[in-house]
Amino acid sequence: MVNFIVEDNDGNRQPVEAPDDMGFSLMEILKASDYPVLATCGGMALCATCHVEILEGKDGLGDATDAELDQLENLPEYFPTSRLACQIRISDVLEGAVIKLRGEDVV
Amino acid sequence: MIHTDICIIGAGPVGLFAVFEAGLLKMRCHLIDALPQVGGQLSEIYPQKPIYDIPGYPEVKAQELVDNLMEQIKPFSPTFTLGERVDHLDKQEDGSFVVTTSDKTHIHAKVIVIAGGLGCFEPRKPVLENLDAFEGKGITYMVKNPETFRDKKVVLAGGGDSALDWTIFLSNVAQKVTLVHRNETFRGAPDSAAKVFDLANQGKIDLILSANLKEVGGNGKLNSVTLEDKSKAEIKIDTDYLIPLFGLSPKLGPIADWGLSIDKNAIEVDTRDYSTGVERIYAIGDINTYPGKLKLILCGFHEAAIMMHSAFKYVYPDQKLSFKYTTVNGVNSF
Picture 1 (spheres, chains in turn blue, orange):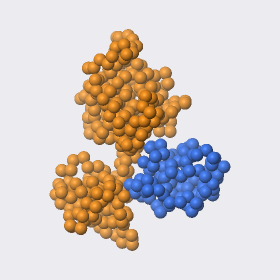
Picture 2 (spheres, rainbow over the protein chains, first blue to last red):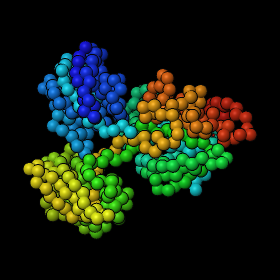
Picture 3 (tube, rainbow over the protein chains, first blue to last red):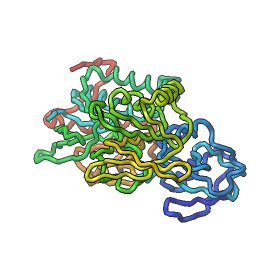
Picture 4 (tube, chains in turn orange, purple):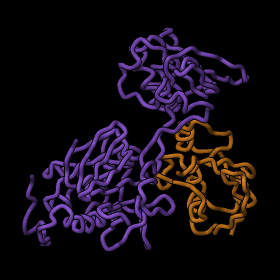
């Protein structure tokens, strides 16, 4: 299992535990944890509704891919450590990371 | 006023297939969608992506599936209102409904089917103070009629394909076009990006890179946009219009106010016929929820078939529904 911290749109931080051996993406774990992530495209890096900012622990994750950058660039606002949660595999590199939700309001 | 048997809100794959199931029962359909084209997220988000779980198709591209569905429902002559959002739903004395869209199109129907997927795709808006105050008064999120901008001053913001394409197009229409982009380069189509740089070099447009929208100003109507560049310096531009182009994002929208039971942005339905808690309103496809729900196109197709058989009693209250196979009866167009 991997443990990391999720900061919601109101700034509240909660620990989240996720299995690192089942091929889940961070987007899937956020949805399963009832965070308001739309994930319109289902995880194809085609909609940017699972936009997150990596506040801590970016080093192990690497940079956003071209497909992610194409989507992020369309958003009104993004950040140097912005990623799409659907493109981040749950693995031990997420241990201790702090992830801030940046997707727009669901309603 | 448009009159129909069944008004389907949402022209994605499930809404389209619902027309077929209705047609087999001789019920006419009118479809409404906020997007300017049919197909919902298949056409809007991933037209070229292959789908592997449509029965009978080992692999089919999303747009191809939409095209095939349009072909399949042709015998039943569906009618469409596209590019308009459903704003109001008014129940009539006889139990039927009148639907009113954002452009004041009225549709009278005996049955309402919500096949709205994740909601209607609405433009993403930049976070700016007073943005609302100038919406429709100089700020617009799509170019519906380019002539609106003839001989006007226009600022476009964004770096995607639509920002590039509209900049190129409006450079021949507007008096002055300014494109604002937060980066130094564009990730959109290289040809379009090259054309935009050419237009800027020829002085036909103003291209302001590495800058963000900071403020909008005006007096009842927009007359200026203030940008902030990399060095935090402010640039004020006099303009008649601002067109922010930051893509689309789905929102549940006015559906949330129709008295339906909603759980986590989905409409709760009775799985016997996918009816909502309001008589004559059904919800099918990704927008509904029930125990065991799977958001799959094929599940939406199944829901459409069951739901139309249930709706028959409202369209033909004096007739008995008899179930028929297409292999026996064929497809009888109207």
